[in-house]
Image (cartoon, rainbow, N blue to C red; front, side, top):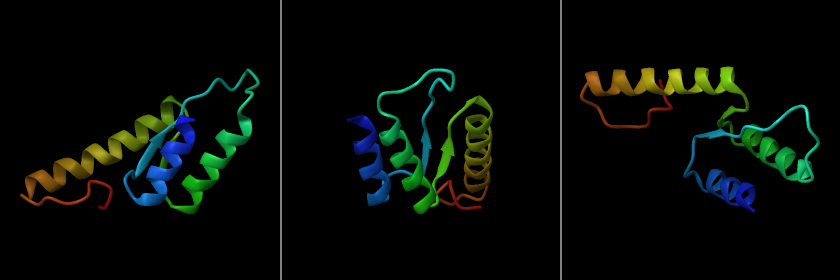
Length: 81
């Protein structure tokens, strides 16, 4: 499924952040897949937004780094301060 493709991209270094929203009040048939993706995020030290607040914090951090890089005229990863 899509979560496996996202996990493969994470392992390959193609993604630095993942936003995976789910309904915490309902059961999911693919909970094992969600947990596997979450473990990969932990292992590869990626940013993970699973709800509005955490996603907003990740985006704010990434945007702040992008603005700093652009102000300094440097092109590099927006993930690194």
